[in-house]
Length: 438
Ligand SMILES: *Cc1c(COP(=O)(O)O)cnc(C)c1O
Image (cartoon, rainbow, N blue to C red):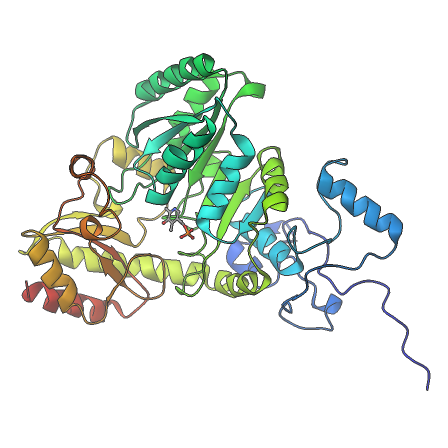
């Protein structure tokens, strides 16, 4: 019996398509998450992408191998046009990158083994000795450590400003950063933002920062504006639309959404991402194929999960705001008229599902509340299907000096809550009985 002919091409996904349309209707991200960037016919008809567990990829011929390495090493711009080795990329990661980019309408996307490895790789790619990083504050604690302790060992300094800074304050901090960079023989290499800040929920005016950067630097010498969009993205905030160049995610949170994986993402124009890809190729901070596959599954329900969590949070906060044992609520849905509300209206399409709850009393009352919760789990992190609660002053921010804690409003009675997708009335019943126990 004749053997079937050998396949001529490695079963792979089809090349990156442009955003798909029906007639002149551009399909929405929620639709594209089910099939974008993957052709089942290239993988034995498998409806879902197989997990490609391989460390290396066979070349069709020697000429193809040379061409791929020209792309990897940057001899030819645009990156590799084929797969080479799994430290550089793989089919599952590439499909994930294409689908992630859809949400933020980004030109390019890169996925990483964690949110922190994404952030660290971004810095290593764009910042060098003598350079200055300008950043909003507060930042995720490990990001602050990365900038203030680790990058500092390589002669990189920083200047920070409060997240809620006005345009005038932004102009002043950029002018100071230029002076500092000149004195150190470096450049202002990056403007790094996090909005909303944790746990203050302060929003950064990305549009104002972009205008400030454009006014302070020549277009071809300006620093990238990067923003950690983990708390509201990609559903409720799309910072690339407001002037950011690079968007970062801990995909561990809403994108993964089931508290069962750790991963990160960096999105933006190729101009800013090409050096990040080269750095990732060198140090190997890419996410693994299994995690990429899990994230593909998660993205199919991203809009459903985030919408439900956001609706649940609005109902729970409505209940909590007038409760006698609640001293205050840091929830973006209840911002009073003012500059922060103005930023929210311009930048955000939803208030998210992570907020701060101030229990009447101090640490003892907050702990009694936490220990009485029955549905909500006592854990740090956010953005999962389940509701989580924690006490930042005693947990995530325990090592922050007391005066900085006070300045950031991290009081002992502060409870951080991430609302999940449970039945909202069950959640309200749980919060009601836990408050009764205080
Ligand atoms: C969790 C988190 C990170 C770090 O992400 P990991 O996936 O844990 O490495 C960074 N920024 C924000 C805002 C986060 O919430």
